[in-house]
Length: 294
Image 1 (cartoon, rainbow, N blue to C red):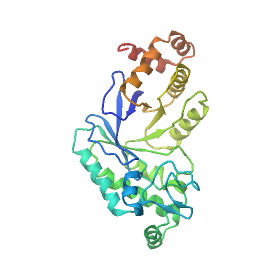
Image 2: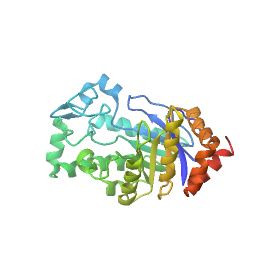
Image 3: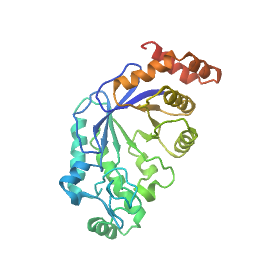
C-alpha cells in the first residue's frame, strides 16, 4: 500500500509515494500544472465565477447553492452542472493540464450540490426532454461530464466521491458503477478535525471497498496541531492499512506539515512498539521507510 499527500503547493516530500496537488480550488483559484503529480480539479464549485456571474449558481426550491444560504447545508458555492459555457471552461482547463508531464487528473465536486438541485429553467427543460426520471437524468448528466473529461486525460484518471456510500445517486447524481467504467480509481476523502474517534473511518472504508468496482484511495485530514491528534491520525492510518487500499493520502497545508508527522512517528518509540505489539505490520513498514529520511 502506498502513502501519499494532498497538498496546496506543488512540492514533493521525501517518504511519500504519491502526491496530489490542488490545481483548481473551490474559491475559483487556478494554478499551473504540477508536473509528475496528480492534479486535482474542483469542477462545479467556484465562488469567484459565481460572484462575477451570479446566474451560474445551481438553484433549488430553498434557494441558491451558496454557503450563505442558511436554509441549506452547502459547504461550497456550486455552479449549475448543465451550464455549457462553464462546463467547457472546466474541460478546457483539464485539457490544458494534460498537455504537461503530469501523473494524471483527479476530479472533485463534479456533481449536483444535493438531492433537490438543480431546478433552474435549463435543467428542468433538459430533464423533461430526456424522458428519464429525475435521478436517472442527474446521473446521466454527471456521467456524461466525466466521460468528456476522460477524453482529455492521457494518464491516470480518478474522481473524488462524497463519503456517502448509499445515497450518492439521489443526492448528487453519482452512479459508482457507471463512473467506474471511466476511471482508474476512486478517491474517498474522510475528513475530520481529528481522529480521536475513528470507528466511522474504518466503517466507511469497508463499505466503499466492498461496493466500488475500482481501487480505492482514502484521504485523511492531517493538519494536526498537537501530539494527541497526530497520534490518533497515525493509529487511524494503522487500522486502514489492514484494508485492501491502493493508498492512504494525508491532506496537509504544506511540506513542513508532512515532515512534522513523519518525525513524530519516527521518534515516538512507545507508539512504534504499540504498532508492533498489535500486528500493524504495514504501518510499521511505513514508519521504517520514513526513518530513512527523518
